[in-house]
Length: 265
Image (cartoon, rainbow, N blue to C red; front, side, top):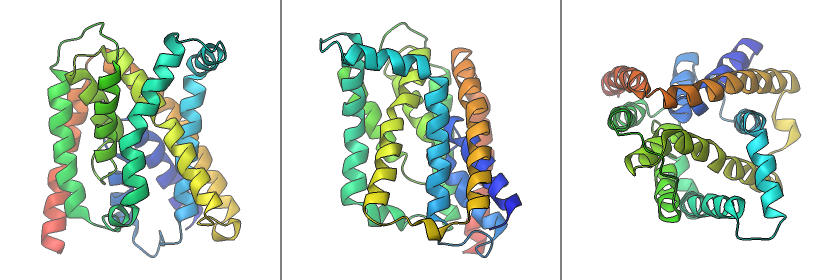
C-alpha cells in the first residue's frame, strides 16, 4: 500500500464513518477500485488504525459531553449521566454478541462482495428516506429505544448498511429528537471501537511488524481530519433534516454496485 492509497482510504473511512453512507461498504468499493494487490489482506492493522482515528475524532467533537458524563458517573448517583451511560451499555449488547459468536461468519461477507454491498446500500437509502420524513420531537432516547438502536447497530455490521444511518434512522423512527439521536449514535460506537482494538491487541491479532509506519500515520491523519469534518457536518445536517440527500446518493451507488456485482459474477 502506497501513500496515495493510505490517503484515499483514510479519507473514505473518515467521511463515511459519520456520513450515513456506510464506511464498510465504501471501503469494500475502494478495495475493488484500487485492486486487491494495492490493498492486501494483511492490512488489518491499517483498518484498525483508521477506526481508531475516527473514534478519536468522535471523542474530540464530543469532548465536553464525555467529560460531563464522567463527572456525573463519579458522583455515584442515578443521575442523567449515569442513565445515559447505562443506555450506551444496553446499545452495545447486540453488537458484542454478534462480534463474539459470529465473527467468522461476518468476516466471510467481506472481501469484494460488491453485489451484497450494493443491496445493503439500497436498504440504507430506504431507511434514510423514511427517517427524513419523520416528525421532529423533543423525546429523549429511552432504555428500550437504546437496545433497539443497538440491534440496528449490530445489523449495520453488514457491509453496505450504514452504522450512523441505521442507528440515527432507527432512533428518529422511534420518535426521538434528531439532535439527541445523532449524539447517541456517535457516542454509542466509541466503546465498541476501543473494545475491538483492545481485543485484537490482547488476542495477538495485531502486530507492529504487520504495518508500515508511514502509511499508518498518513492514513490515521487523513481519517482523523476528515472524521472531524464529517462528524460536525453530520450533526448540522440531521438537525436540518437533509438525510434525503444521502438516501439518493446511497440509492445511486447501490444500483451501480448491484449492476457491477451482477455482471462481474
